[in-house]
Amino acid sequence: MLKGQIKSYSDKNAFGFIEQTSGDDLFFFKTAVVSSGDIVPGQVVQYVVVTGQKGPQAAKVEFVD
Image (cartoon, rainbow, N blue to C red; front, top):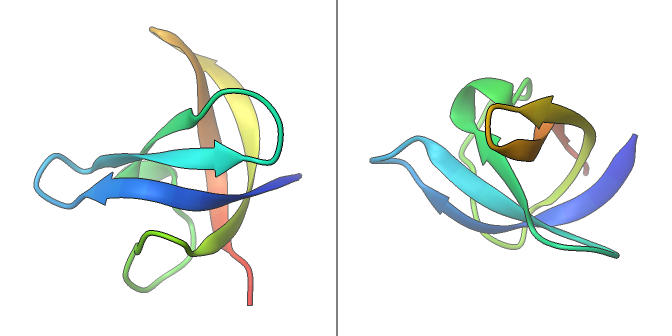
């Protein structure tokens, strides 16, 4: 799994972006988050990259303590 941090998140639209340690920011849907709790910018996460309808996106997003 890769690590990054939440760059931005819109609860209203139920999606956000993860800032990767290398490469472009990565899109994710709220439904891709498997951890419970609030999604906040700056939060460290681990995830896998999958191919969505519009390109790469994060899946199996988990919060890292």
